[in-house]
Length: 180
Length: 119
Image (tube, rainbow over all chains, first blue to last red):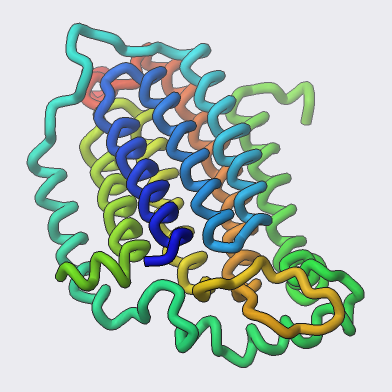
């Protein structure tokens, strides 16, 4: 194993443990803190997977804004406490999850190895095209930015529409019509 | 199975995150915890996508005129950037609805809300 894949395995294991803690901790504030730790772990994993743009977005949006939204929500509602630190295991849900895990695990073997240079995505013509032509055609050195803003510009416009719609929905649901 | 652990570790962690997320959505009685579960499920999918575009020794896809060298595929990164922003919008609407549910029922516990409704 290369040093990168070892540190990647460590950080992904940390993220999964934080995710388990976020679900099983009974106090919602503890769960939110565990979720923020999970988001930061995943942001580091994105850097190790050579995706710094995704890492920045994950750290700012996933660990930042989402955590603030959760904290505002529990400040406006309740924070169920109690004597127990963890939730009880719900065995009916475990059964549902076991079915999903069983189905997904049967497909794992047919996926290419992580980091394989023959992986379909890495060798696809679209990847080649973007890497070859993004700079000459758009003048942007960061290919992710070039694809986001130029080649898939309408997709990003749709994304902005979703954000506007969500913002309006939040204002309407919270009866803040004065701002609409 | 052990060799899969070495070569497909990211994909196994993807399965783990999706499983944890689904468990959170279905098992947690608290509505806020359900939204946390939804977010974890979503990040599991992101991990699958970003891993699919990674090549050993790849550098981020920032080219300086020539394209010699190994780059990670930019397309999964772009799709996931969009998905992260859409995901946080979805979370914001879900949490706003939760605040309204609390105003109406005075609880966020699924069972308690159901009892209030049947009364």
